[in-house]
Image (cartoon, rainbow, N blue to C red; front, side, top):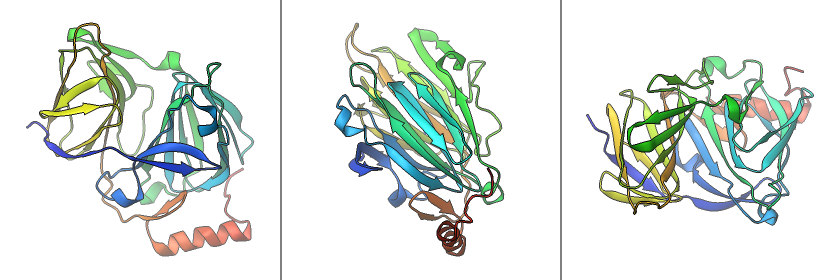
Length: 284
């Protein structure tokens, strides 16, 4: 059964961190519709003042943050002593688990462009307090599936046409794909019934279930075995480009305040007490 469209969102411009201007496509107000996903931020900008103040030291517990950079680079450091940067085409999959304090500082490229996305995925109750870890994936490790009609799919997580992405052993069994569909070409993608499916357009134009979509349009699908769309425009135009996310819903209660996501208000209160008392960090 083909998935229908549940809703199309356009996001809201918000200021986060120390003054970063970004577009929040979904977040706190949208729980539990996007379960197991919590939030998607688009921080594409060609204006350094929008992002240079970055995200200074802050805590996380109970979630995974997935940062995908298209242009520029993001420097990071954490309470376990890790330091590094992810650059154009790279992905950082951070499992906050029992708790981590880190900072993320976007730098942009030589032209002043900083293009990227951050997705928050929930952790099931049984994994909320696992040790934190990073998994960094450089652009060269992300395989591309070549499909009929000139469709290209970068496979970060999941499998497309026999091409398997490098991110594995994740509780929500996700797909994270960046797709490019040439104008006039139709695209159909099989999905697991019962899984949440989200499409976020980052370039070009298309039709999803007869509804026109373009940059900054996010589609949340109904349930089904496949989703379908068509890229519009003339030959030579920009392809329809989008992020495609699917994941297994957790179906658990969500207690969320700021960068902390737990299952109960009691767990949330305990976390903030630990932050005040200096007992938040369990590792490092």
